[in-house]
Length: 309
Image 1 (cartoon, one colour):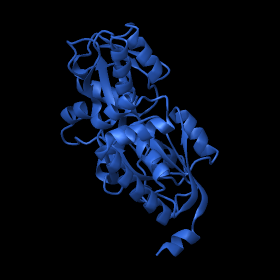
Image 2: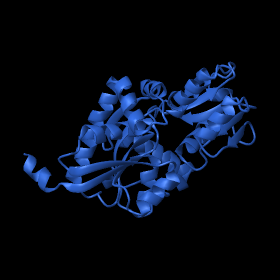
Image 3: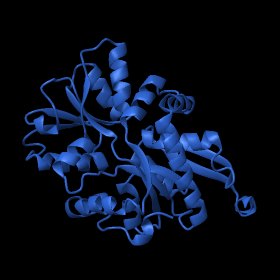
Image 4: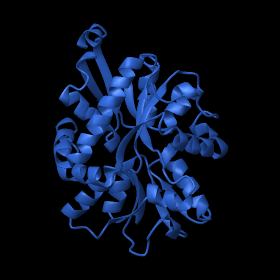
């Protein structure tokens, strides 16, 4: 049974992702040798923002990457035959605040919300969520743009902002740093997933991130299935062993403290499903984006071949 996989073995398989929970199973796949039957060497490359990822894809420098779920739809809409293999993260975005009066996104009227995402999926989702509460940015509340999550954390830690939108593990890292500094209380207020569930009960599940196959490997179906299955197994391991997973992540990404990474795993819904099985939830989101934010997915829904190997 091993001979075909060995014959098809690649010299190197290039995985990529951000410093976020969606990437943690990829790091476990590298360290555990989960794809050794398919590649002589498996590498992981960290990207800092979606613009950097787009450059990596354009230069054919990665094979599979953790991504927000709109990005492969956008790339596919521009004519590249990429595929979304799975959805693995269903809750990773949080509203964080110093103000005990803020109990959810609906309480942000008249407030300023620090936003490290300008053109990416979290910003689009927050716009829709605020709309569901009758709130319009620039009129009912102020969105304060910052370069990235680190800038948002710095403003909160310095007491120069009260509320921010952050993605795990940035939330856990912020709370850990605030505790180390004995700062004024900061807390998770509400996850975007929870708020979405309340605002859109007909489509309560919010797919947020998964693994994309680049155009170079999109037609290698056996390899794609192996990657999807290995990722699902590693995701289950991370969820079941959050401390061990956090220690593994820290070895690869030493700027992330173990305690903060462990907490981020515990609070994130890391549940890997093949994209074909999550197609209904994905298309509900894509239809919403196509109607209100067509630039986020390239203007139209992906075809059937997009969903999985």
